[in-house]
Image 1 (cartoon, rainbow, N blue to C red):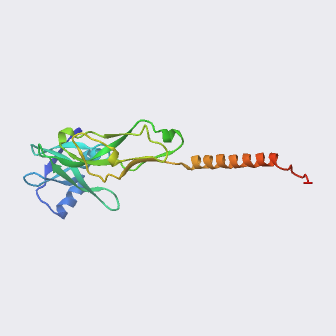
Image 2 (cartoon, rainbow, N blue to C red):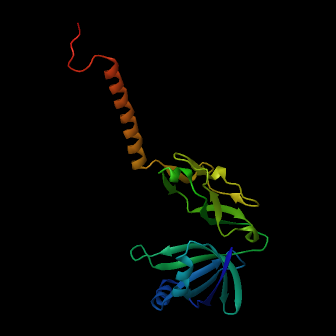
Image 3 (spheres, rainbow, N blue to C red):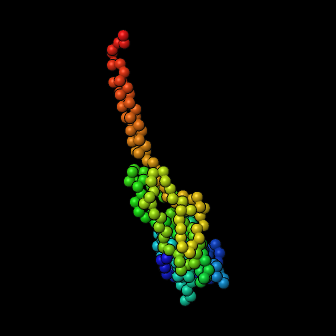
Amino acid sequence: MKKVSLSGSLRENVGKKDAKKHRREGNIPCVIYGGEKQVHFVTNEIKFDKIIFSPDVFLLSISIDGKEYQTILQDIQYHPVTDKVLHADFMELTPGKAISIGIPVNLAGISPGVIAGGQLIKKMHKIRVKGLVDVLPENIDVDISKLVIGGSIKIRDIELDNLALLDPPNSVIVRVKTSRTVTEDLEEDEEGEEGEEGEEAGEEGTAPGAKEE
């Protein structure tokens, strides 16, 4: 898993007024929990944007007043109107202790269903797993090279070494649905076959305009 360094400064006061002050100055109020005690700090919003506007999941080494904290980003609170980040929660990692985290899905291979005209629909962009930090992958490869039209790949179809899957087994990760174009082509083929049968019947029976004796 990718590692990123982030720096911050301890907050002297914790409260709504103090948080608003830091936001006006271009900083984001944050907290680290899961260790011996919670650590309240602020970090620059520009540096923080590089982390959240990315599909990747990072292990974050946060430096605060000379002390290093190994963390993962656990939660982000956004403004309901502007979508600006209001607050971020980080969980401190403990060596030898498993964590739960969402790992990005990477589709590998070419689907025969897509080649045939089907539409590929990615239902899950991350799969939640539980495991030790040292064995967490950057992404989870899902092989779609045998995925045909109408087919799907579910959580139960995935096997990962040293990791427990946390999503429901029947959750669909990716599927291929029939596109409108493919459906129309099939309908046209069926109509064409029916027309040919009608013509053949006409040839074998009485010719148009003839009278039976």
